[in-house]
Length: 592
Image (tube, rainbow, N blue to C red; front, side, top):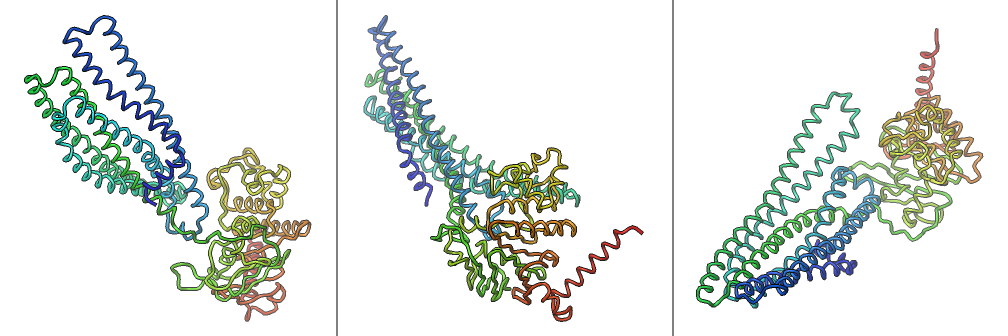
């Protein structure tokens, strides 16, 4: 969709506001055209000596009333217009946010956060200005130009009007040339502002790492380079926009000189009165606004076109996973991963290769294996973050692609290895999936996640703000708060994707013990998938699956896998290694 089509669609939906603004602008244009004619009439009356006393005061009062009415109408059309244009900005930002929230990981691998933030600010503002200021300024300028030129030609003298319009074709050619450069420079300025946003966002997110590595000076230097580049691009766009004004000024100067010269000659020949020449001169000054409006409109329109080109590319980019399911009910029953094969875009190596897994309601499935063996991919395919190239994931009676994404994801509580906390209190972060939860429920889940004592040591306890992305908390605290959040939700499936990697073994054992007890006491059966590098986290699972190179290498209960022996089984070997490491750590901590 082009910018023109977008704005026409918006105007059609908000026709009442635009119609009111247009009518007020038409009234302004008519009054503006009437004023010079009235002034010319007053001048001729004074020269001829038949206008004085009460009649003169009435004429002046009419001019004053016209000026006041023009002021009120100008205020009115701006309020009507910008109220509608701001609604467009709100709609675009909501549409962009909704689209971004539906995109999958593949989208965010190719689009940087800072640039997306720039789209929601500068780019939307530019489109909003095109729909508001540019549209109505164009209407106002065009109507004023038509009325002024018509009045000059029909109400004063057609010869003067023709002479005054001679420079305008040259000005139109100059405007066309300038507008092309404004569009290119505006797009470059928006792109470079996005790059600057990217750098700022990455710097603030990784400020601890930058300080630890002593890279503050390099980061500041890079910021300076990006800031200068963005400023230069913006300056270039403004410099080209500034060329509209000289083009207007030169055209009006030529028009004024030519028309006043001809007008003086016509007055000398008594073919034109002084009052008519005065009116014509005032009409010439009124052409300043339409000419400047043309430059202003072209500038805003080209900025809007450049911004909409960037916005539409994001809004129209296909979703990595289409939400086209027809089943709105929450999924229940057994989950099957059926002969799944999947590879990530750009990778030739299969992340999963002919994988078959089953998770019964109320059971626990443990996934272990070396780094990059496909454990987390199993969970991501269940969450429909990606679509498998072969095979399917079924839940109950349906393929998960048949469920609406909202229904599917409300049935799962996922705790990733790097959980995300929001700029809110600890209690609000735990209650994210269940905002109506009481403080007692929140506290109970925090105890299950072994984080209650840590929270109470914070300055304001559960009411302590955690900062952006939980910056004030340690990695282990963030993981345990995320676990408490997942336990508080009513989702029937709990997914722990290496969610205990940042806690010590003692705390891990306490959390797992609490979790087992909680699952036993739960009124509704809750299935659990545990992905972990620590085998102790999955030792009580109903089934343990060892993944290697995207394939299922071993499967069975803990005792059965240990029975294979360290020589034959990866699980048994890793269990022996990890138990040895744990015993060595315990001996180091034991005082002599």
